[in-house]
Structure formats: C-alpha cells, structure tokens
Image (cartoon, rainbow, N blue to C red; front, top):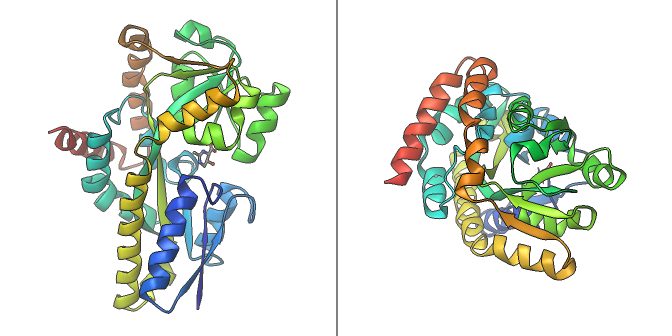
Length: 312
Ligand code: 6CS
C-alpha cells in the first residue's frame, strides 16, 4: 500500500531532503510506498496537519511554529536564546533530549499524533527592508512570524510589531509592504528568493528552526511491530542524513544570496549588540509559563536539563 507524507517545504529544501531519505529507506526495507506531497500541493501547514489528524494523510512534517497553536507546550521552541548556537551541542540536544523523546510524544499523542522525531533546520535570521542592530530599530517594523502566540510575544519583546501569517502569504506580503521583515534559516531565504524583496539580513543568534515529523496515531498503532520498526529506522536514517546535509549549508546559502544580490547586507550582531535582545528571554520565558499549557513548567525544566547535558 501507499503511505501519504506531506511537508511544509519544496522537495529540494531541508524538509524535502529529509522526506526523500525517509521514503528511500521505507521503500528499501518494506513493500510499502511513500508518496510525497511538498508545500503547495495540499494547502498550508495547518491544512496538512488536520489532514493527518483525520487520517487522510499518514505522515506530516510540521514545525512548532504552527503546531504551537494546537499544542501550547510546543511554543517553548520560541523562547529566544534557549537553543545553543554551537552545532555539536544543538545536534546532541536533539538526539538525546528527554523532553523531545518522552514528554512531547505524550503531548502530541493527545492530538492523535505519533511524534517520530524533531530536528533542527538551521540558524534563524531576520530579513528586513531596513538595518536592524538594536531593539529601537524594530520600532514600527511589521515582522511576519509563523502563527504561534509565543513567537508573536518574542518579537513584541524585541520591540517589533509581529504579524502572524501562513507561509503562502509571506513573499507577496514582503513585496507589497504588508510586512517589512521576517525570520527564517538562510537556506529558505535563498531557495524561496525572499532576498529579492528584502535588503538586509541580520544574525541575532536567537534561535534555530525546529521542525517535527509525525504520523497519524491510529494508523501507526495499527501497524505490525515490524512496520513500526521500519518507520523508526527510516526516521533515524533521515535524521542522521539531514544533520550531515546541514554541514556548511548556512554559509553556502548566504554566499548564494550575496552572489544573486550583491547589494544585500549580512550582519552578525556582536555580543554587545545582542545583549538587549538576550535580555528579553526572561520575560518571554515567563509568558511561556503562562500560556504554554499545563505541562509548560515541566517542559521548560526538562529542556534546560537536556541543554545542560548536551553542553557537557
Ligand atoms: O516560515 C515558514 O512559514 C516556513 N519556514 C520554513 C523554514 N519551513 C516551513 C515553514 O512554513
């Protein structure tokens, strides 16, 4: 039979590369086929998640940037400066985190979703129509964010005017001035050509883009143990592949962007410049504890313990 798998990006973007590896592994190790549905074939991110909850799709890759509206605890990924900038620490965290491997699967299960893995997609950068070096520069700047209440709060704390929009409206929104800025990893700024309608890229070092692969829970529970193992193994292989794939990706993407548009500026803020942004983390964390659902405190504490373990 055929398993249907939807994701939020194109085939040659990070989620697509992950999905292709997953498909290859499942098909090499079982009689099942995996049919891939990239962004734009079945609707926006929220649509493909609903289609998976209802069983029309078997698999979905959705980022907490959108899932956070449904599972409030998943908003934790938008506390700024929580995830480490160091790749080795970041990857160790995703591999070994108790929060990701134990707590989040329980929370996703309450929504009919089997959480198979979470993985990072790359350092998040701000693109804008004006230079940004301090919170004051964000004054009256409409920053498009994913539809996640804590992400909205974090940009409010940065001093900006956050505007939540689904992905499909972003390029046009930047082009027509409905929004002035947005955040995403470099590979995505390059592949979607957002740089065409933005003049500045700023590296605040505030986050890495987290995403998640899930299955419809009834579908997964109804599979033989052997098929479940095929899925777990394919997930692990895709995870390893995507970590490897990301080596050097950010720098290569930035080079491609500046080659395509030499006038664009790419600025890495100094530690001094980052300090006022970093100072907002405490306030955003407090908001997370208010709006992050019944297990917010437990999730935050476990994340911090996991991050400490990954740092050592
Ligand atoms: O900004 C967004 O909405 C999108 N960003 C990425 C990197 N993947 C999918 C998501 O829809």
